Length: 359
Image (tube, rainbow, N blue to C red; front, top):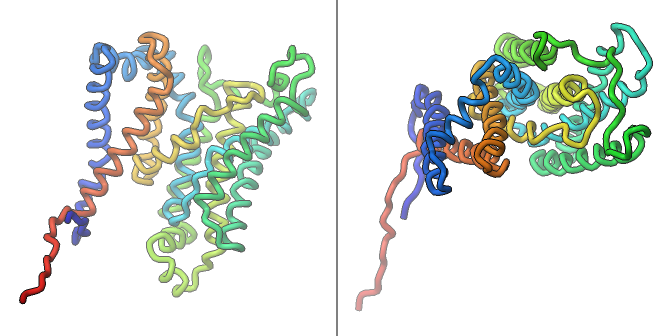
């Protein structure tokens, strides 16, 4: 019988090398996959990993793609360090986009520097509200946050679809399910002329720095980390566990909401059903791939954004399905978890004792 036995002291260096090893195994699996599909594996890998960023325009698009993923992932790092399993970043992103869009449409004719901050704050509050529901359910009713946040993703998606097919649909939009275009005052400014890189990228990088300061230099961050390591010890030390649950989930929801409103007020410029192709779910992989560390998450974010762009390139250039992106994401997560198991546990082969009756 094969059992898993915890290692006495897992290697810290191997823990950081695990994402690199997982990425390498994913590449090897990709080579094998493309060979089985009858594609030239080298040509396919170049199409996915190099062609999207072969010029400055591609690098700019990489930054645009990375912005919402980075915001969601850095927010998830806070709750995951607290051992709170928020799987609802996708729904919180959608609610941020929905609430921000509502405010932008109410201020369609308004002009002034106060319009954009009001739109962004509305999106942040939308994400916080959606995460806050999960926090109340966990604290007050001891519900499993994994289940509640997953189910709330679908509720948020259907609320978004109802809005773009109903009250927020553009009456002059030829019956397409989309809102009117936002006014110029509600659009995030472009950082680099001739590209779509917008102010949201700076907000995402600022969020990374803010979370790093919170988690490593503040007493609140210390309490969150202690609660994640040992909730009993945190209670014994007098830390208010319920308050920390609220704080962690609200921070995560706020950053996901900012990601959502950043999409509608940034590259999209209006509310549409396809705000996110799954950024909130991809952010979960990014958070663990980056070892819940701000720098690691930032690097993992750009890798994930490249996979999104590479999947689109493979669809256009090689005729492969767009689901290829999700397949690579799944393989990356699988290999990361497998490497982590081998780092933290060792296999033991135990022989089952055989008893018999003598007589």
